[in-house]
Image (cartoon, rainbow, N blue to C red; front, side):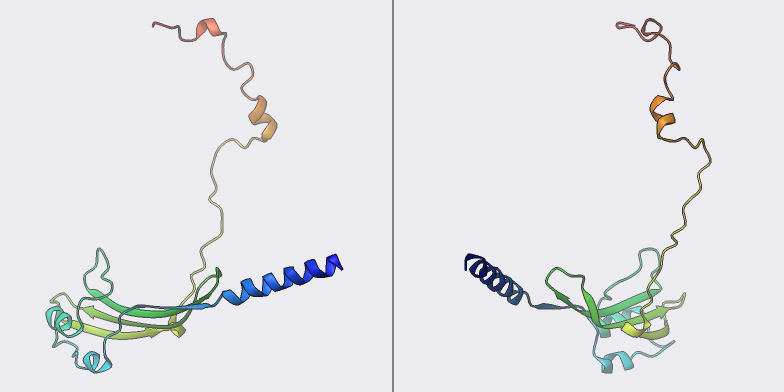
Length: 153
């Protein structure tokens, strides 16, 4: 009887804790109105007119001011698990050397590419020693204590 009661309490507590976890949905970024985006004309509008229509871009590359990005994304996350991007819009506007619009591109979640880093190891050239060689390798390499540095020198 005591074991059944303990299991019921454990099961009830687990159900209560799991029911308290809910899906967290977050929206970040800014995508301007499509009417404003279609008003931008390639080779006619410049950075000032684009900023006047759409506002400051969400991101400008640090060393390259010829690309502006306006983006937003919606994510979902349950409890402490990794978030999942459910919706993403990226508006990329490129400018030429004279600061006129040269290209307008749209990207979505379907365009997202997962980058797989190279898992190869960097080969280092040096002496390959095992644990015992590391442990006992310095025995006899150094002179007696009288040959070392003396206090006051």
